[in-house]
Length: 125
Image (cartoon, rainbow, N blue to C red; front, side, top):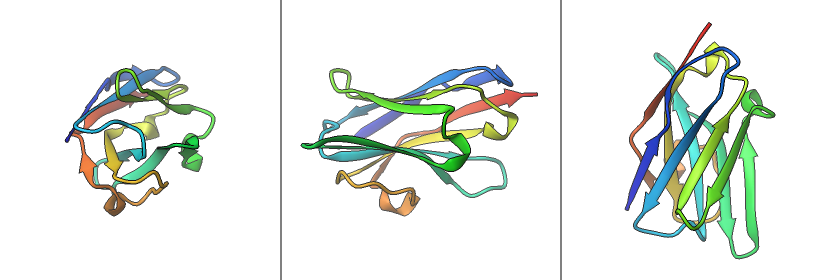
């Protein structure tokens, strides 16, 4: 099982980035994929999650990014995306994707079974 996060970079305030989490070793069905971020000196924070089951998928967002970030999936590519718009300096962090072996939502890092390496997002003011 491997999760490969990519897409980070340096962007100005108000700009956009799209993060990708390419998953190998299992299909997205019947799993939850979460995006977390960790800023220097702060704890890892769950920002978004998509749950995928036989009845469909659901998305969840933490309040600070609602309306600005969108999580989505591409089953054919076995990839989950995090589209980040209207970026703010406080969004600066290392972003991680993670997977749960069940299709249930959680923002708790300990609930996730597999992790990708981080990708750095820096938003300049």
